[in-house]
Image 1 (tube, rainbow, N blue to C red):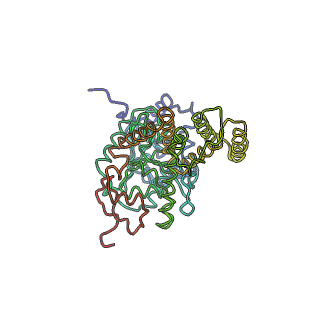
Image 2: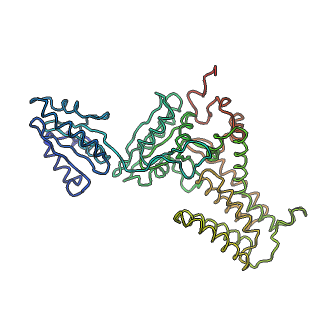
Image 3: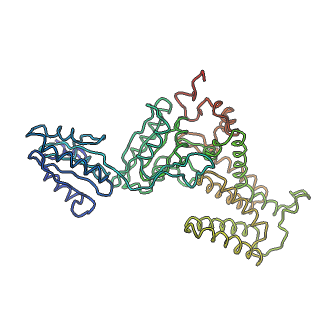
Length: 493
């Protein structure tokens, strides 16, 4: 008979053999955080294995006290396994039968109880991962709305979602990924809404991931799932807001929760999913629509303003006399295109510096950059004022983009258009813009057209992209996710 694979090795009956295995293979005694507590219950050896930093000490102590009291109330019995199972005072207890599963559970923060003479063990979920409390994410703030956001604990994150969707058809299917990290990944969906084929594809791709560990959590999962290569445009949407995640689940999306990550992956998504923000839905439909249009304008400015202004600089005859003042009105020895690149990359320097600067110093750094560097650079002739103005407007447009990943991709597109205008002038702007548009059209995320609902055109969905529809009027789920049940609200509502 073929040798048994590692994950099929049964748990030995001898607790000493299990202890030797943990010492040799897992690091018991050499790793200070790996613990074992040895008890004698009804003349049999019982060992409890746990990791100090991942388990709740109070739970473990209460369980030990309960097990020790068995000696006071029970007589010698051959059915010790079931006696101990009944005395484990915890809501999450399950038996396991393989050694590899036992190791995985201990290293995941659970406690395993092994009993002498038994080829199975009991797993108790005493996990209490170190982490922070749910709080509003910095990148998705709203003026009025919930202040709880996802944290690095997958259990807390699924609980925040359950709190908003108390539906018996909501599913969280857990998968372990990573030969060494054994990271927990939960695939979330509503059973009678989400597309079965999409669920199957995502689960199959996650199960096929072969890697030592997912230290970069959800981002590494995304790269295995979509294999997008060097395409800068985001093919999934990230959110740290529980209300945003719940909304997408109700629409029929499939979400991916990765332990140790405070953000959740939403699939599938289009370009316009990255343009939405919770603030639009916390205001009246009219105000939400206005905010959305302003955001659209900011995104357009972030992509096309600098290349278009530079085109008017190199081809001034395109401008009517009334707009001739847009400049540049000063002579400079440095080509305008070089100034634009220096200013744009310089602003990127400032953004990165702000990220890595301690919060008490970031305000001072911003003042130094704006007042000293910018003004002195103009006075010494490194930049003309118009370059600073339009580069700043383009950067502000970048900051209006809700998705950080989309804003960086749009910046790359802007720089490519600048290069095209610098080389070919007007034809470069026209051809570059056309190629840029066609590249967006060609992108597909999990077989989803990136520019839907405009290409292919869907009138109802396009209207909801342009106009923030009131909640009572939003009765149909988006067709792009192929929902099983298209009605959001009962027909008689």
